[in-house]
Amino acid sequence: MKEPKEVDGIFQADNPMPTWWKLVWLITIIGSIGYVFYFHFYSEWPQEVAFEKEVTEHETKFPQKPALVVDATTGENPYRGDAGPERQKLNRGGMPPWEGLGAEKVYAVMAWLATKNQTLVKTK
Image (cartoon, rainbow, N blue to C red; front, side, top):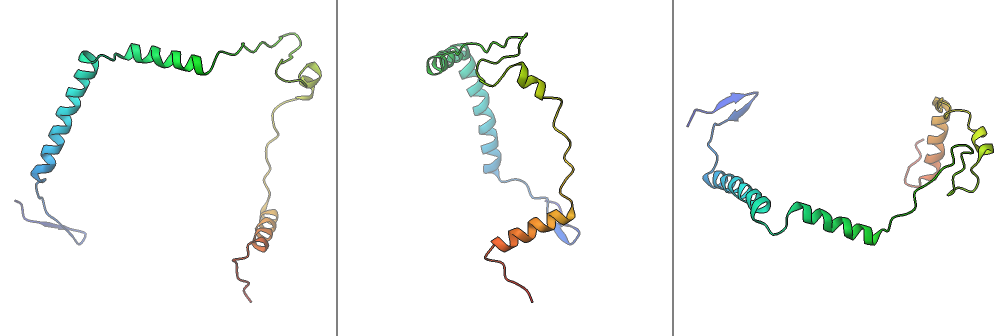
């Protein structure tokens, strides 16, 4: 065992790891390698079968909906009643950039929140 050294006022000793930690680490590695071999080569439950089973369960639980068909000439969406060419004309671009509240409005909002918070104590 080496002599402890001091770094920034902290003594550091180069102690070896406990034997039981090393054994647990080694058993974990051996067990995981064994599990991989068992699951992929000797198991009765291959990955393809599990995938097919999950897909069939999902399809029975959530039957397929008809595909959404949008008429390219008019732009109508069958799931939205107000859709159509008139609605599309209203959209003249993206959302305008947000300019922010500014310091005065932020202070006003903070003051309003402070009036609603009963746990705050007024200072004199």
